[in-house]
Length: 69
Image (cartoon, rainbow, N blue to C red; front, top):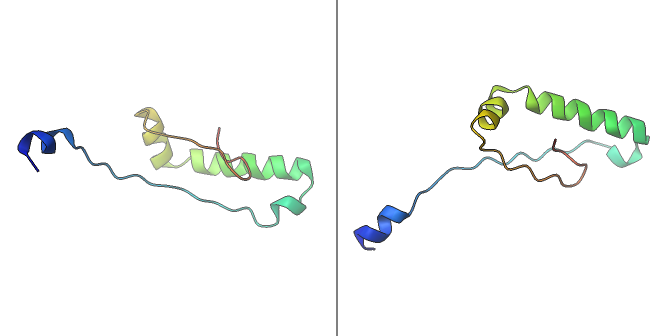
């Protein structure tokens, strides 16, 4: 690979968080919302989350139970 091409490549490490709420689909809707809200509060209170958010380095894709903000 030429030196010119190598200068254009910048590698980064990404972290992916997968979480499952056990028996989520069996919960009442109010309990589902409360469980997702509690999970969001826990994740968003971590130092790692707050640091990444302050640096505008988060990519949030809500899937499944709707984890996200």
